[in-house]
Amino acid sequence: MTDIEKTLEKVKAESLPFESWERLAGEPGAAYAAFCAYRDYGPQRNIRRAVEAAEKNEANWGKRYRVWRNWSAAFRWRERAEEYDAWLDRLKQAERRKGIEEREAAYREVTGKMLSVVEKKLAVMEPGELSQGAVVEWTRTAIDTEREIFGLTAEKEKREAGPRQL
Image (tube, one colour):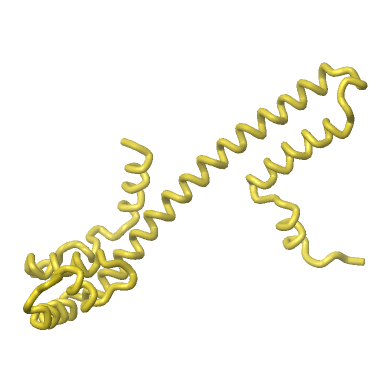
């Protein structure tokens, strides 16, 4: 099972046992197909747009609109589509969070290596071999990068500390 599949399974497990955007008991197949067209239209959806997108060049457009409008009321299309949008958003957020966590782990590994190189260099170098400024810059870069990864930037620390006391 891939990481994305694991993430999807986790989000699905957190969802209700039955998702409202699935076919409801007693909902005719044609009504469910129409709902899917409406649901998949996206956040700017409305029945008129969904009918137009699904039934291009249809002679009975007005009749189809009325049928869809009745189905929409009977089978709570708006509510179900909103819940579907929220579910999709949770999936996207879970994937973003996973990506951020993976990048943070990679950054921690790189900064750890940077600090290790600096430590080794400091242990074996002669005092005149490298300027003090270069060593300070290496160390500052590694530490600043690591602190940023953990959300400990200087600006955040200033905000959390509040106004300075004189």
